[in-house]
Length: 248
Image (cartoon, rainbow, N blue to C red; front, side, top):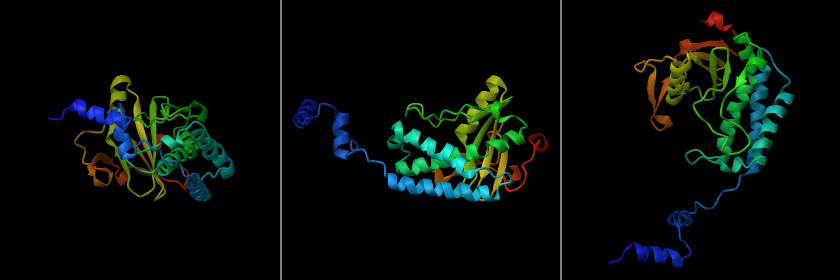
């Protein structure tokens, strides 16, 4: 009868003392695909095109070349130089695609930060970035339930949608409920539906567990999400934004 010692000896003869290393060898998981920087160059070009078009109809257009240089290209170089690009993965998607999705969301937050200051009548200098995405190393580059911005008694989770499907992931709501229970700080989702050019405002601190907008989204591996009802949308981005006090 063969036993584990026989199997261990077999792997040792092949040069492997670790089961994990041998599994990675056999499945080629130890071979790291290099980043296709030509493809990323094309993706960066598309990001430039997307935000240039949005800026052309925006109620308060900015110096788009300066915006892209400071936020797209500077951030890209940090991700590249700190070895983060080659470590990106998300359920088997290509690294370049994960980068594109992340960068598109990051640029949306930075692009609309001025509008957020207007809506909530707070200086941009008073808006603190509290999200966990940093560019120093892979360990500090984390996508977590923590909100993106904080000021006064609010946390803001800014998210963008590009397909006309407007949801909030369940773990964001659970985190918001935890923060509210502990500190009474409200978490608001500002959802930028850039497929339709509209923005929703959703207080996710007290969403009921039996709210009818909870659905199972099959396109997201059956995840439970809060579907944003059309009544939450209060701003078209080519118009002047409302004041939050008026929305309330």
